[in-house]
Image (cartoon, rainbow, N blue to C red; front, side, top):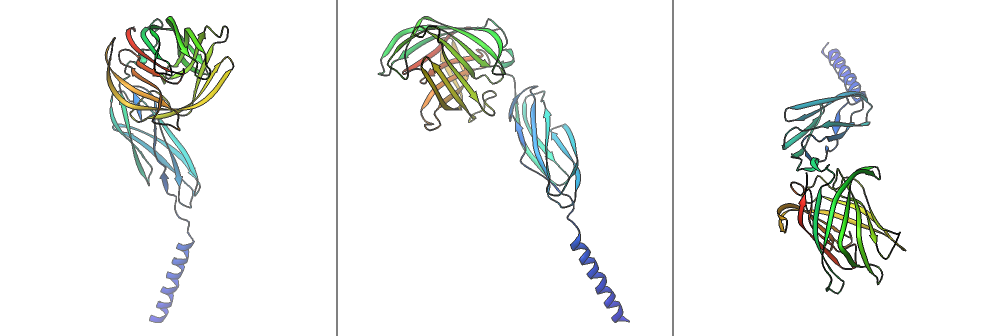
Length: 329
């Protein structure tokens, strides 16, 4: 009798083992890395939080993806994913106060976190007033390191809000008094510039287009356009980088170069208009990252524009502009 029971037990265990081996692995949901864009935002601005959910099991199944940011919660449902299938999930969030936040995404099987910093608008939202004005003194050294022209004045006024290349921008009108004398960068010519129009992205605070009226090229303004990819410009944080293709057309000159931008950090500088806390941002050829072709110090709290600029890219020599006065709404 004991022998019969032993045989039956062995058969039952064998059936259970074979049944277990034949079952598919239950649905299990993992997360890819959490993306918070931008990782530094201003109060009330929308932040996009995204991830990819993958069913690493063999059985199909659905799950809820939960978002937690301090006391804020939200969730989205995934109805069904086959084994090995993935689905992108994103949330929109806007913080109503400044601070450092922990963003947490979770499924029943996985949890991941990411940081979010929220700052005040720093006056960016106040940059929508036509008539704001900035006055700079400009000095220029030719390629031999000798002053080509005595200091002149550059008067810049916000004249319009327009859409250029599909992007909302501010249009500025700039006037040199007297005319600026500059050396052409790719030919042995001395050029004279009296006026220029500049278009700057309202959201990202970076140049989109510049058109200069050059006396030697009547009816043929010099134009420079900047084309960016990915996240660029504002909001800034130390170490942030982005790239642009820069296209210059001036008469017979048609030149395209690649430039990389980098935020070196926050600096306090003094100019005739006062002392200001600024973001120090540099531009360079990606092949020569230690040689800055353009530098500017931007104050977004009071001046809402550049406090100082050094341009080694547009002309054969170096042009420096410093702020002497400003009037902003």
